[in-house]
Image 1 (cartoon, rainbow, N blue to C red):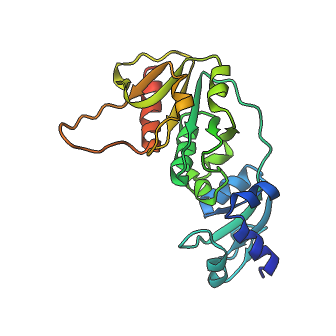
Image 2 (cartoon, rainbow, N blue to C red):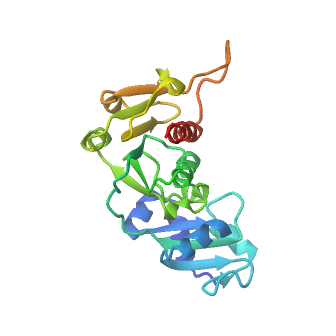
Image 3 (cartoon, rainbow, N blue to C red):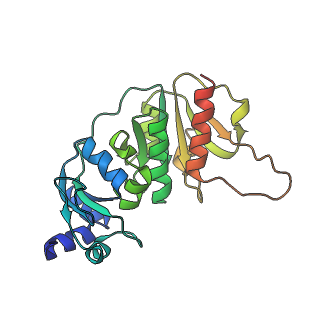
Length: 239
């Protein structure tokens, strides 16, 4: 049985201000929730339309799940979790940062890509979409338990203070395939529509692009998550 207060809270958590004020977020989907539970993230509520999903889960009718979901099509499992305490930025040769990425699917996919390449941190500008947005959580496919998102008010100062050369994705930059990357470096990606902010562009040491091999008119740009995957593949291949 889902109480009126629970229903109200779950729906309020679509909004960032309620996620911030309560320290809670919604996760949907068996794979994602299994990852969160396996990582011992604190679960407040857990609902499932099928019995025996988890000892903590409460079985509800699909029609009720449809009222709770943050998506057009409900998942069979929905949970409300406490966001964990943020740990300090780990010391790593490679640092990835995003500047103004607003699409939840892109950020979630970038989190998943970081996980694949063994990166435990992702630095985010303050105007980047909240990593606990339910769409981000779902797109991460559980990788959010292994990749921390660090939101900073001053991205350019944060990158400078890391004392690493800064590579920025830029359509007018040097070819990714003709660049020798330094062992320790920071890589920053802007939004697909606006690119890097003016403040961050000023501190870029090396502007890098993924060359377009189509002659004549073709795609104007790449999805930022796709670009991130190509960059990391090339960076780690060169190692």
